[in-house]
Image (tube, rainbow, N blue to C red):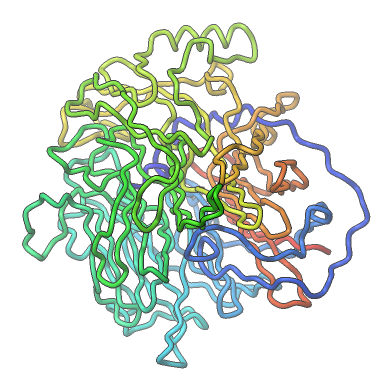
Length: 640
């Protein structure tokens, strides 16, 4: 479910502390060299594997310090009154048809010249955002019809926050009238009752498999036990007709009436990945409605898992569950990353790496779902108000990256001075604390990691040449409890249950998380051994805290990293307004630039020809739930 997009209200003050700004370097700019790799960015994660790795090498660790702004584009999302209210600009452009395509939070679809940033066309899809929380769109997809030419033989598929799938002509932006009705398919069809349009929509780029457009959905969580089902549908790219549908309902569910999809089943809101050769598509699933109060029986059978489907018919091949009976909103938040695991004995295994909100990374054989690194079922608490909790949870021994798997202690509390540390310790002592996977109580209990992670939708990046996995993560304590319904019930009403969920403050009196930093990290992991190679704090409090409170502590982040063959990792994501480049092998920061608004997105990079420039492009618009500065900027950087 779209948990990470909706939870951020209480995160507003997290930006008060973070990493000290590093000094820049002055040097003569390096000359651009002709020749070398020419690589684009044709789909959201660069390829269907989701590795976010570019073969481009023009920008290197030696010359990255010379990057300058090449062009800037504004989407216009902030042009009207009240436009800033609930937006998060998380889009990553794609390069296809010699054009950059992207979406704004309000589903304005833009086509840009990749060299100049000049707008070729823009189409405002004008979604109905009634019922939405944070309004977001992460990307669009491109498809070319091998059997046709001319108008709509090349299409941009864009899904909206209110559940519409549009097919637009890639050259003009005009709707492809042969697709659905007037160029769009209403994804609300066959769902049953939808209280408000934006309670069910799409935030991630659809996945293209052959001549099919595959899409999941975001469903507003913590809302109601009776919600639309999280069906995944493969649509014919020419007509919009449903080719197959996967409902994620438990196998024990009686057959339905064939007219509506099962209600409240787990959804897939994060991007999918595909092994085209083996005809497998990998779905990161959410939880059944509602998270904090369990449904009956095995309704979570496919919940908080990765599910492998056959791309021809949508039938399950295998699934692996990361959280049993998930009441914590620890749904699978990120695109599964496909890679070849190089074993110590020299053999190679087709593998899948999955980031999770608990801060764990699971590495599975992508043909069978069997863990490659050991996973142990670990005893956890079954107390609290919910019944039927699992007595164990799967915890991987490797890769060596976890936020914290042991029980948080009073000694883990932090303060800039004795008074704020003492206050955090005082409040921590009052919390119910059963360690990770602490259940919900009537009294306030530890919520750690919070449901934005650990890792969130930013997921994983991989450098196959260096065999290094790059991951950004959060490390923030929260607290919550269940209470009887009262009044409007606010953000997490849990309609249909005896309770509402209440978030309790675990921020210090100075606006920082009560637990010790770093609150945000960037980590490099050797994927043969599973061991960390390096780890650094990520982000600064600059832009969100006054001088001299600019500390090098690491801050919460929302967004993702990319890597290049030249040995660079690019990432923004932090709640400060910086875009950074790190040396992939060491984690050393080599470059940073101040943005007009924070970059809660994933960058991309491309080069059009061997004599041209390599560009690095980022959306910078902040995140309303983080209460940082908002904007509507798309910025390209290149060597001068």
